[in-house]
Image (cartoon, rainbow, N blue to C red):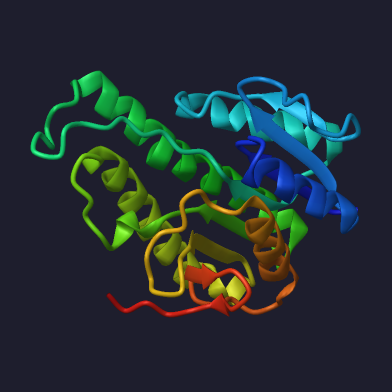
Length: 222
């Protein structure tokens, strides 16, 4: 039985995805700062704070020891501090550091540990990050959120190229409206279905996976 590790198990995307993979026959590990009351007791919960990138290695070691190396890793954590639109540099350095730790550094550490396990789980192993449009669009008031997402998106793009010959897949998933605008709030069930479909597909699809619910992948060039 393959293992999926879902980092960030909130009541929306996280738990919807956990249920979808459990129904598909996966052993499910969920990682979050607090245990989600709505989670199925059969899912293994691991305490984890994405603001501390140095603890990612321990998380993967615990999951691997308990239920095996993850064949699928879903990074579904985000941190956002907002400023006034006309004050993009309004955050204190410690807030910037926390934002980048959650949105980029821990994502990097998770991808690094995931690949170590992919050596054992083989072709088809998949890393998915829940993204948004901030890797392509600048929105006043959330500069540092966009900085983190942009860095993570570049990481995903690079990895999708570097590991293609080994059969490891990497995705930055971005739900959109039909007109290309952001979906607010995001749809947990739509993400769960997409993530399961991406994992089942044996080939690497576009790394920047912009999708519309009910339509699947849609390319938004601008």
